Length: 420
Figure 1 (cartoon, rainbow, N blue to C red):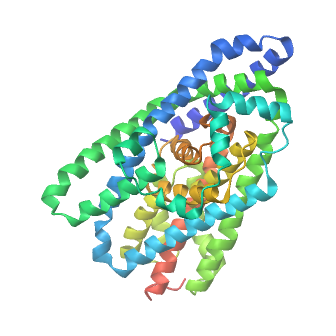
Figure 2: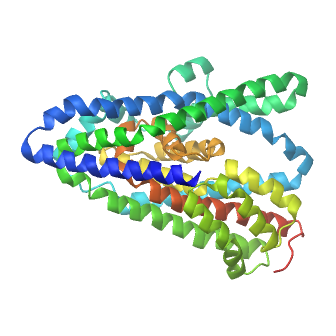
Figure 3: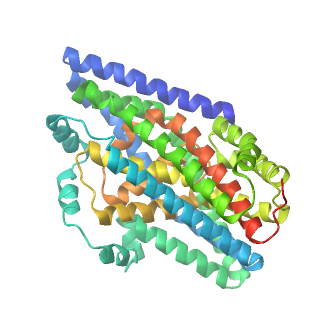
């Protein structure tokens, strides 16, 4: 699994670099129209393919994931503590990302002319989206709008918060009816989820070409100015990830367990290295379980519940990345995000992280969900996709570390953590 993943992101990076070179040449030598007319449609097709799988993937994965949580009844307090920990740290992670992005403003610095043209080219209805952002709906409106009055309409219009709410409620209800009646429904949506994940695999195979086309078109139209933003963006994301690990997880270990922080990070180090190499918390799960049980003193029964569940619902690094990315892309397009919209980012990224798959391109899919929820053009994804590999590796380390810290905290609060 590791080699194809490395090959994929190497090809994406090559596509980014070649696209940037072509864009620079087109911008300087005057054949930008050729790039915009004949090459950009390939990138637009890639964006449409990503958009195509968002709704069915998020509904099926969330429904199946929620329905599978029926084991929480058996585990009682352990299950409640685990879910509460994951939801709290994910919310904190997004908040850190939003705070850094709003403070450091990595997406600013474009000239007004470039920003105006970029916003105009992002989507055909960019002006309508910006105008909608200026209406500043209240927090109450945002919360009420999560509940769909017509789920079918929510699917048709791709209203992601409403779809997520309906999927969660459906999954919960499936756990409350007899297994004989719920099992066929769960099996069906497991099949849908599998098909969507396979579709993501296929779509990501053309990602290098899509990135090449989109980046070449952006650079041909706007020049080199857009490329310098990537360095600022990457620094802000990595800084947020480091802060989350050093502050949030360290405080959690110190406050809720007697384990030394040094012992924790030394024990989880092998899993962190595997996570960094593979960019996948799911692929790292066996190593994480071994390190957590053997080196951190967490009982097997807690490891076997908290860690697999964390590999599904705990995506702190991904959530932080989505928060920074959403604000960054909005800043690039000159769209000011209101408090209500940023609250929407927190809610959407937290809920979307529950069903995030440990596959190549999953971060892009969930970012698309967040962007859709606040009306930011999906074309902005192309700007950041070239640095996705290194950021994916870094945020996977955060995800794995968060899983292990949860297991330690839950074991400690249950009085079952063995001293190390």
